[in-house]
Image (tube, rainbow over all chains, first blue to last red):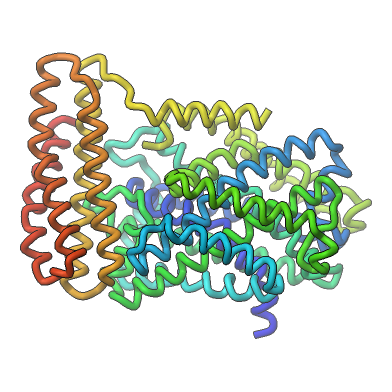
Length: 408
Length: 146
């Protein structure tokens, strides 16, 4: 059990990255519209985030400092500021969507309009960050988010492996869908898997937990198990939508529609577990993004940050967190569609990916920060290949977004 | 650079949210097919939700949310399509044809939402019956104009 609890940071990070409000809907929509033809993108994304999250965790364990903290020092204030502006903007959009996402999950359980839940949810997000210890928070929401495994059960019970494997192993574009739309969705899924705040949160979390050289194995276990689990949940959501929603020509645009496969195959228990999972995953992602807002801004300006120090010692960090939460709640209350916000935020994050991952690759190869534990040649080949892919994705994102009118 | 790109993207998003005019019959027909597909999706979502509700496999609040959103989606799709100016007489005919299919869909979805929110769950099956024909007619429309 103790060993399991050691990997909850990776699980929480991955759940936030792979099954937050936008990802839940984007994965289900991909399954409903493209069957399993985009499953390969999730796998490519999982490998990519594993490669880079392992580096960021290793840097944090060996240097005792989070990645964003080192970006400014290693690459200068100009690069770091560009990185900060891009990542804060995307992070803020995601935080807005997650607060609304938690409210949508509560709406599913109560039928009370989600807008009425937003102020309460925003308060709870702040309260948990303010009062609950980082480790406790990470364990509660990491483990609770795992109930989304209900979608694996759904797929297992439907058991139509032939249909799923046919499109997963031989991807093709279904009739009525265009090539640009297919690649737009591919970018959205890839962007979701490699969302920048995942590495910032993961490495800052490692510092919060005081990882040292002796925790390198814990780092690997977190990355390999946590992110792989995130990928499996992602694929299960896609598969359940493929099997249940696609045959009726249902296009997914609401969280509520994603409960239907669980209702059909498991019943009320399945729906209840699904709603709990939605709540935990979106609440966990809201905590991650709210904390990441504080982490990135504080680390850029060199302020004391984190929940591992007394609150009075990190006032500016907590001020950034609370202001971000308040502003996100206010934007959420404008009735902006939270699903669209987060879908666009993951696509926009794809455009900013090289800015996030290039500095990590540089620092993970610098003996001044990681001593003799620099990347192996093999790891550098893989990481560099991903960097090339990230640049291609970043260049293609905006034109595809315009050409497909946001994938519609 | 990325900030600039994000701003351009945001502008593109705003532009893409507007309804582009249709300058030819084929462009208008494309919009009609997309609209029919969107309304079909709402209708089929409601049918599936009713199917699970009749077998007591979901909760009333969840069902109420699903049906409310389906009604809203169908109404929004119809409203967006109707706001596009038909470029010629053929398009005008197509508009009437599709409206004849969409109006009963939106109305049937509203009936379902009302039934659920007033607790008349035993009437769901009967209330949802028209959706079978409506869904089939919308699918046939999409097929014939694709």
